[in-house]
View (spheres, rainbow, N blue to C red):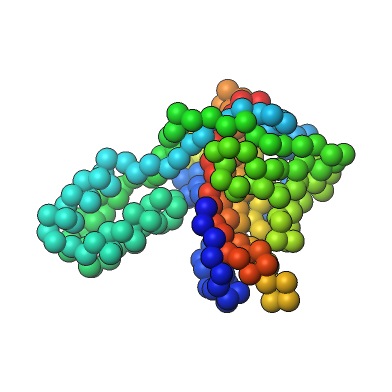
Length: 240
């Protein structure tokens, strides 16, 4: 995670965040169905939960693309921007500066970023106070979850910047080329800013149910707290 000072307009100019590509992951349901609180509680991590840290890695096809662009003398800046988009799970767009044709580009990017275990674990700092689930920091999490508060009754997720969002249901994935066998889950998208407090946030939390009682938890944020900008992404899995 990095921090620096910048005008609030810098935050507003940044695009949206997203870890999972819903074109191959999941469509969102418009409303929550009855009994959603119980389903949410069954997916949430417990206090002291040990989790497996994950990361997104590009496929071999992307490595071959890097080699091809280097061979033809394509733009390193364009390649670097493409790699950054891939790391964020964003759609990859053709850039003529790569030095290859658009048709050739399409042959190299017929992949989806894959979630891979890092081999590292972490013990979550989660505290239950009444109907509130509060997240703190822990070794390996880089402060990304610090200050998040989830209301288990209303489902609202509050961020330390002072903004919140209600959850939307995630439907089971049906795309034949999906990289995760998603059976359901929830997603929160928080966005807001205040010129008075110099606070703002654009973040996304995804809680995805997989087979075998496995859960994938992802949180990505770009935020400003009292004029200081920070950003980070954390992905981990655990059994419930």
